[in-house]
Amino acid sequence: MSGPHKNVFGVRSGGGGGGGGSISLNLTALMDILSNLLFFLLASYSSQSVEVGNGLKLPSSTSEMALTPQLTITVSDNQIDVSGIPVAKIERGLVVGAPVDDQGKIVPLYDRLHSVKVSREGAGRADIADADLVLLLADKGTDARTITSVLKTAGHAGFYNVRFGVVSR
Amino acid sequence: MAGGGGGEVEEEGGGNVFGEESSAPVELNLTALMDILSNLLFFLLAAFGATIVMGINATVPVQSSSSSLADTSQTVTAAVSVGTNGFDVSVMGSAQTPEALDKWRKRIPLREGIPDYEALTTHLLAIKQEYPKSDTMILTPETGIDYGAMIRTMDAARETQVKVAGATHVIPVFPTVVVSTIIK
Image 1 (cartoon, each protein chain N blue to C red):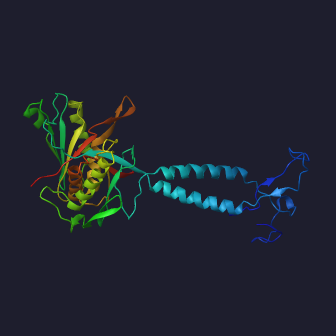
Image 2: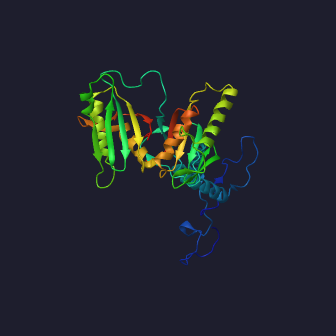
Image 3: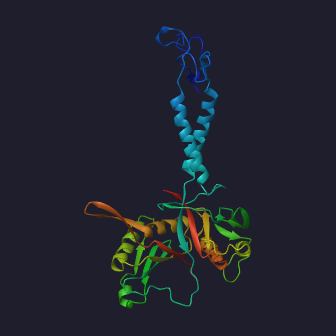
């Protein structure tokens, strides 16, 4: 960036006014703006409580309800997991390989949710706000039967309220 | 990043606040810092737009000793079944006559091969205007429906924009959703 070299146009660089000296750019204002933007974005980024991964394609929605951290059930195109722990496999949108009892519960999912419920009660956190709320992040192509099975299972485990995670349209 | 060389810190007047002689002008080379900041900025800008996740509340049916059906004359519960052929809408209430409730039963077929969400919103809004204290919809997805269609149906039922005297108002229609299943 400096020096009396010639630029691509063959013009000697480094000189406004033909002086030939080095240019001193005052970047203070630009640094201010960049720093402000950086801190704002860092703060916003860290306040995002939900991590969407595994190629999950959430449906878009006009909802404007912000999310708060919850127990999260993720239904991707190949598995169901609870807070990152896989509990059942999915093929073509439907649960496979996991036993479903006569009440329609997905047994491994129920066991996992029930153990969370029990451990919360054991820790004296059964009465916390939204104790019966679960966040469901599901791929938009998931069969509705799988969604209703998951909801039914969550309901049996004591999580009667569900919040569907969607991408803001 | 072009433009290195940086800002110049120069004290005027021959001395600083401690009475020391000013030294030669200091030139800070901010090029590397600008590079890092710019990279961070673009990464955060890209990540920020991709992770805006919102929520839609719903509940599952819960067994109860008391009836959860709407029990006032101004309240009904809408039942919307989403199928591959369209929507089936009906209303339930314990304070209305069967004839009054049957009036709102309607099948909304596909329009040009896709679900007619506008017609669903219009019909639910008409129900809401007749029974203004209603807010609960039972959503029943049939076989062959995907999760995206469920969300679109909830969106169509949640609220709508109405123009009154030139001003646009957002009116809640049936924002409370209970997701149910068909028992065979």
